[in-house]
Length: 222
Image (cartoon, rainbow, N blue to C red; front, top):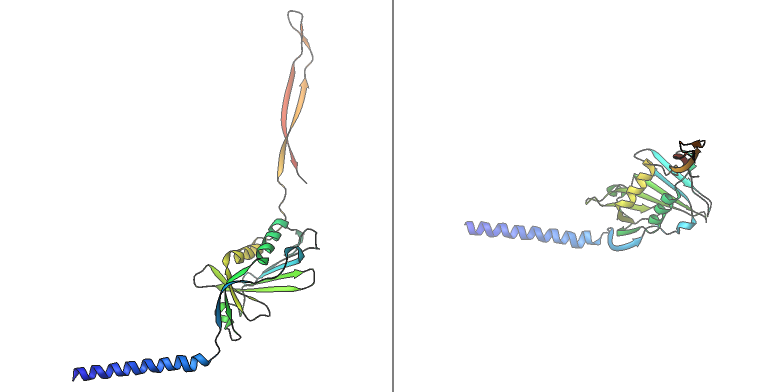
């Protein structure tokens, strides 16, 4: 009797597994689902020397940093305040953005953007080019492993997974605006010679007493 009951239970389990298999293959298999692609794919497409605008908006902090320039000229910060910008820092960040590649691509027209934090992006990055073309990158949440972020180019359907180091640089641009560093003063040694009046020693020989004094003078490089 017990053997018969056990056999019945096994048959029921096998039948249930078959139903699940049919559902997955025949029903779910016919639905269009987002695909996942491996490999490195360029996210941006521009040359650093063609860039004339970089704007980063941090929606969580409610702050925006904007820098502009004319081609071949120095960068200037126009938001959150006007000042000369740190060219080295801006050029370096633009270089990393121009070479930004994804480690994974999630493809499909029915992607749930909310699942990747892209329905309300935490960062929006705009790069303006001399040709008046604008490229905008939306930054979502970290992946479960915590070392990459989900991003999407505005106007495109695909979602990319990129390294978090570039995202951290973008966040730092907002929290620490790229104002041109103030030159540090340098000390220059300026010798000063003080000569005393000759005196006559007991032997009748004149003696000249001279003193050399060196004092530091602070000067700032322009």
